[in-house]
Picture (cartoon, each protein chain N blue to C red):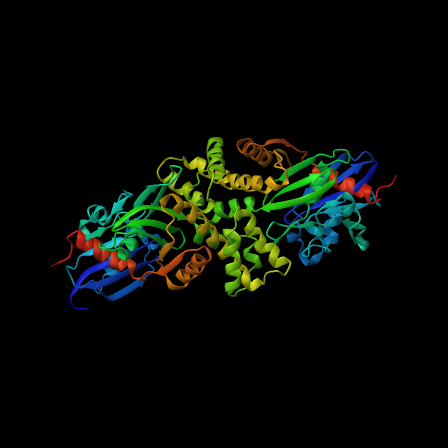
Amino acid sequence: MPADVRLCAIDWGTSSARAYLLDRHGDVVAQRQAPLGIQHIRNGDFERALSVLCSDAPAGVPRLACGMIGSRQGWIEAPYRTCPADIDALASSLARVDAASLAIVPGLCCDDEHGAPDVMRGEETQIVGVLDDEANERRVLVLPGTHSKWALCEGDRIEAFVTFMSGEIFAVLREHSILGRMIVPGEDATAFERGVRTSLRDHAALTHDLFTARTLALTAKLDGAGVADYLSGLIIGAEFAAAARWLVPRGSITTLIIVGEAPLAARYRAAAALAGFSASIGPETAAARGLWRIARRAGMLAP
Amino acid sequence: MPADVRLCAIDWGTSSARAYLLDRHGDVVAQRQAPLGIQHIRNGDFERALSVLCSDAPAGVPRLACGMIGSRQGWIEAPYRTCPADIDALASSLARVDAASLAIVPGLCCDDEHGAPDVMRGEETQIVGVLDDEANERRVLVLPGTHSKWALCEGDRIEAFVTFMSGEIFAVLREHSILGRMIVPGEDATAFERGVRTSLRDHAALTHDLFTARTLALTAKLDGAGVADYLSGLIIGAEFAAAARWLVPRGSITTLIIVGEAPLAARYRAAAALAGFSASIGPETAAARGLWRIARRAGMLAP
């Protein structure tokens, strides 16, 4: 059992959960991943899942979670806070499951430019894990994934954000559309770049361009082993084109911090370069760091 | 058995096939639909399927088919003709299955604005069934479906066309994405209109806007029974926005002829009105009429 543990921090999503034990410095001293996402919890027995996730934590260590565990389908609902929202807004709005000594970070909501709501749950904590108190400049964080998020931040505050369903659209097209049938397993960075560039063109039209994955392959102008990467490039390119437009009234910031697992973050960094952004890749343990910062701000940590 | 039959015309697609018997005036005197699309043909036994489709036709009546039967996965490949292409180009390029006394109309191909190929197979015949020799004005035909086609035509010539994967994208999102789980069965014309208008906005971003089907429903700003129509509206609206841009260098024609089955044609006409087009709905038997015209031009019809 690791000594000197001050927090059990849990990034608890839909399909899986990852628990971190952090020491007095906020450093991760142990972690554990398990397929205990909320969709896999039977009969609402979150307590048992929590005891598995925290089994290495000393008794009495505070527990803080973020992600879908705080959604309506989770353990207890942690209502969305509205943007702009800073770390204090999150730390002062934790939902509590008293019987399990668990606190849960709320998600964030934000109206889009047409008045439709946008939401995030879990990403706000990753973002807080990348931000810090001292930096006052505005920054744009990109969190690629099933539902990619672009967040405009200033200091410790998340000003606004926008979601793109890039990961999910890629997955359903790959697995269930006629385009998926053109795919031969393989990787092809050139095909990815070609897809990104196609979607970055003026007047690109994604629902047309996607069809060219089929026609280019049928006419041997695209290798079967490049179809998946070309499709990925089209969809991610459309995300960058739209996000760049979203940033125009927000100062057209061109420096990004990409937060996500290494292969996807690298893919987004390549797209960023093609779209005229410079991008750095943030830490993979952003969620653990964010939970630590929120726990500290909420007074949950022993001195 | 109908008397005076001059042509057995077959619209032979991927999932189903429809055979028409036409009399000396080109009028449909009988028709038969069967689940004999090329994906359902076992062991390449197209001959048996043809005999079922033409079982009501008198012996010796010529047979002309269009659609995926002429693709690489069909009976015999009828290579694509390149646009611009008129009825003579189609009639002079029929592929022949001599043993079965069957002729097959070729598909069309056309490079898009970025040099990627676009293709159609079957729609060219429907288009020819709507066009006529006398009209010389330019017309835009819209053929909604799994892969919607917009075709710019002049007289009997198809100048150019563009494909949008609207129907397939709607289907895979409805059946396989998180958005599908928000759907409660129902119809809601207002939700459809709301989706179309959202996608017609300047700088609309489909992969973001699709996510609002979820967030609007989660926040009770969209009824579950309206989610499917809202999604449909978003996707069809994106098609109209892109097609309108495609038409700009082609004279920005604002009069459309929509060719398709009644419910879908009506949905497209509603979207057309919102997008500033005026639209009429073409005949549902356009394929039969097109096959008749091509057969006549190819000299296949007895005098």
